[in-house]
Length: 515
Image 1 (cartoon, rainbow, N blue to C red):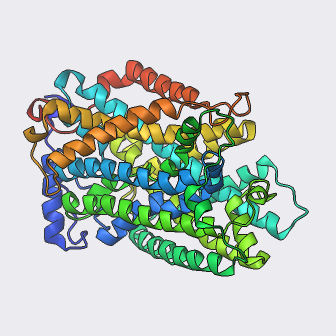
Image 2 (cartoon, helix red, strand yellow):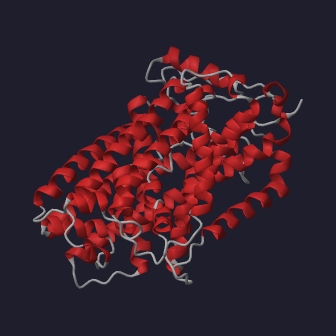
Image 3 (tube, rainbow, N blue to C red):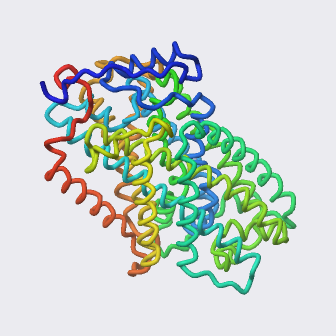
């Protein structure tokens, strides 16, 4: 009997579920049917799960980090209307993920769905590719959030000390300190639900405070024509359409991490119901908060030139300072934004560690014997968490050599995650949407339409986001995303041919029985 055929009995932790031990037993038994043991306690409820999922994207915070960059690639138009478009796209992606998460709730997410749905001949490689791309996207997302927070901290210091000149190493040092600080929160599993709820409430409270304060304090307000009809093309592209397309990456970034809740499916009761709720709530809350936040900021904008050339290197902080005309006030508002960002990074660490752990228990990574271990005292996959945060720390050093190359990881984050979403969707089409057991969240023909939109947008973003954001192209502004893809694919194939093609399982479920 092979390792793939071993039947595993559930390890139930009585009372570990927020809904009581009966619900915990039932969920563990369902998990056992997929061949897995209940290794982590079901500490999360639906609110804390929404907290993790929303704080992961934290759309209104994310748009703050890319607000001014987007203006140069389309002006307010790219943000205001681009957000509406990206919210629609994200709703389709969220619906597609929710259908699969409801039908096959498991912390493996994309890679497990791909394995279960793909034709047997291709199932292991399809699963393996989805797992690698999903993890790479998660790590790049952690790195991009880390840098944004590091720059915010250094920018606040500069605002209070005008004679201070920011160097790249200042941001990298802050990056490493932020990464380590947020690392600590994911060392204690039972603490995470409370952290998730707290950051959700802090984020929404900070959103309303800033939403009201900035327009109220601004001496002048932009016209509706400027906010809704002004198109700015400072990219060097002769085509405004091309400038608009390459600028879409800014609003797109904030919704790139919609799969986060799926990787907590084994830590929440009734995941077939609660995971889709968390995913769709993330899109609804994120889309509405980000859009109204942008309206508030654009109407309060005083001088775009001063924002772009700010010595703080944090344009949104400069906008706050323009509006309140007070250093302390601007720093307080930016601190609210930064605390919200800390919640985002904590959630990103949770997400990356769960992908690393779940993929490793099916032998997806080298060193899976260690990465797949759960520290039952801490109730977390501690080794996987440590390794993920270490990789994020190493990637931060890239910023010292080339900020442009580092920023290319943001683009790679979006497209790699989208590919990891599309792989199981295409596998679902191969199997037939009605040839699997549906979960409580199933949209029928609307689900098929959402699938088509998701795959089409993946192809579109993979091609169009590879173009440089500014012209003419130099070594300083080149889009190195193709090189990032190349490194990920090289590592993937190297590991596949050396090790994984013989040892990767794809799933603990019986190979023959699952096909």
